[in-house]
Amino acid sequence: MAIQLYNSLSRKKEVFEPIEPGFVGIYVCGPTVYGHSHLGHAKSYISFDVIVRYLRFSGYKVRYVQNITDVGHLTDDADEGEDKILRQAQRERLEPMEVVERYTRSYFDDMDALNVLRPDISPHASGHILEQIELIEALLAKNHAYEKNGSVYFSVRSYQKYGQLSGRKIEELAEGVRIEANPEKEHPADFALWKKAEPEHIMKWHSPWGEGYPGWHVECSVMSTKYLGEPFDIHGGGLENIFPHHESEIAQCDAAHNHGFAKYWMHNNMVTVNGMKMGKSLGNAISLKQLFTGDHPLLTQGYDPLTVRFFVLSSHYRSPIDFSNEALQAAEKGLKRLHSTVKLVRDRIPTAPAGDIPAEVQTVVDSHRKTFIQVMDDDFNTPQAIATLFDFNKAVNTLLNAGTPLSKSALEAIDDIYRTLGEGVLGIIPDELTAEIGGDLVDGLVQLLISLRQQARANKDWATADTIRNQLTELGIVLEDRPDGTVWKLGK
RNA sequence: GGCGACGUAGCCAAGUGGUAAGGCAGGGGUCUGCAAAACCCUUAUUCGCCGGUUCGAAUCCGGCCGUCGCCUCCA
Image (tube, rainbow, N blue to C red; front, top):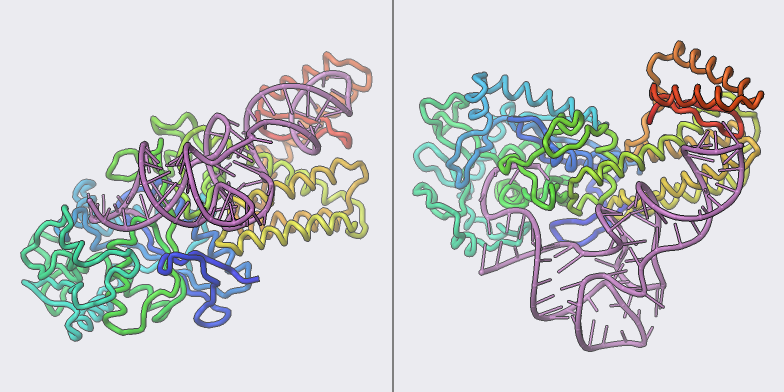
């Protein structure tokens, strides 16, 4: 079976064939670290996290590069706005690099909580100024760029293929309503490679054109190819970055070196809130920290990071996802159901009898693993992968309820699905589902109450039995009388 | 105005030519002392609307309506 993925460049699904067999280089546009991450970041980075996890699961050696943008990303159009980092630094009265450090840490804290594995390399734009200058010089040498008053611009008319990714035409861009005339530009669609720094601008570097700072698109051109080669396999990012960001990344590298750029382009869709796009500038952005705590007017409660992850993966990465409390709550319940079966399986393993794996168990395990791989091979269809896990769960519950205890090896074969597919690929079933408050002490006390209640039940003293159960429920401890004994868990 | 996407049950969401996955919610049942959990059955004769192609369409084509995105910083 081969992995098929949707390539934005060709606008269709293609069989994935890495440039070098067995190895995959993937670059994903990372955050500009001037504020806390929000649900939109979660959608993008969870999506690509699963893509990387699945490529590894499929046997590829993957190098995953995701940049940290800490300079050059402007707040306004036409290369005229302030630098986002700089503006935030002024607001918080911090050094720009303090802002960068603060929000980089915040970003990784949130991603760790979401069980997003760290990229292999997280290069900073500010750490690659020299490489960016080199690329700009190469473009100047080939007449793909020109200098004006200490700034350097890319000439879109010099690169015939400009528009290949976004489907735009240079002539139409020139007629765009909102592109303001910048007198330094030879063509309205030309974009800045290097900007001259005004005297008060603190983030600036020496360059052949004087003191200045790099444009936004160059960093990604440079850092992707530096670590992955030219061309490389996959470039990912949000849909909204196709133009001008991704279009310009291609132009810069291909114009300078004629090696092409990324073979496959993958774009995730957007998050909406009540049907409207969520964006920092729209004021309806919910930060991940708020989402986890529930501290936001749009939230009726906080949501566990894993619930958020499950929610994101329950729609396809190329589909938009609309935020609502109802949808999050449904996800919360669904995930809990998945987890409770996993926990039942894991709790039984230590005391399960020895024995072979029955044929029916083997069949259930094999068939679901196969289906899971089939749907993931088809452009990383996580909603169907999750559906497969639920189907599997149902089959497992039936086996668990069958009466004859499953052997240890059978339970382990079942758990292997949860570990490799549920956690290894999707990242939604943590190893420790049993982390109970209080540890052995609480467990011992609850077991004591359970045994007292058992005696009451044996005596048909239902009043006492129900009192124990009800009062424990009020304390947040739920008792379940199963055919093979009473178990307890936390929850309402 | 240009480019693009989407519209599937009460809600969320798969499915891109062969007769509607999965989750949440609802109804009925089994199990239970009663519960809980789990399991079984059930809830769209139908996929925004109108035409067309086809033996056959949610899936392809045309038109219309609606929603959203990009074109300007945003994952």
